[in-house]
Length: 241
Image (cartoon, rainbow, N blue to C red; front, top):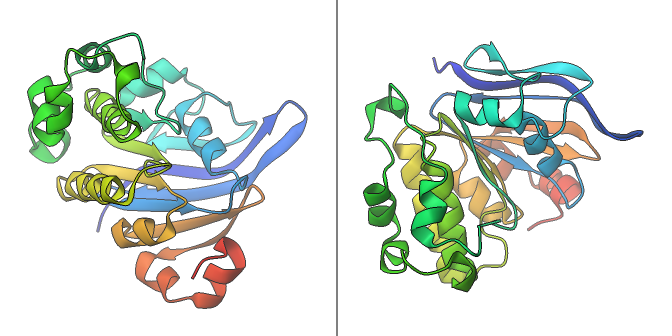
């Protein structure tokens, strides 16, 4: 039985006096992909921000492979093994592709599931376009290329858990398909992933498990197969299909 890579338990989080997460809890099992779904404004990105330490929970706990991380600074959480692909890509536009990757480089004693560590060469093998544009300023890349760079930058930290926030947002269908294949490959390599995604079809095609957030609270969770078969739930909470 798979162990838990990440557990979020009864989290309450606030922006100032505004209560935005209400006792949210879910778990990501080791080597699996959890799709965190919900309508715009439901609290999905806030969940990722809380996991990364950008927002401190006022209640509840977060553990990474059994070790508490909720009180730690974002840089310590990243060093502990959580990588983030942020919404909007947020690449360093004035730095070259290569420099964007190098700045995030981090090594680990034990690569995930004994796969090869992430290096510049491995990122360029995974994303050949980035290799072709390695000396180009990141701000001059297309949206799809910047998304590849954002993913590659997170992988250069050799994370044990990868958080991905809307990786298909604003991309052409072919690029969405390419990104989907990369995510599937990462999961096959044993990386534990939380995927926040408005493209529900893409998310359900990749996920093992699903958690659904509505107005800052967990309202539904289960296997991807069970959630995909629950038409009433999809209509009620996601407004799709």
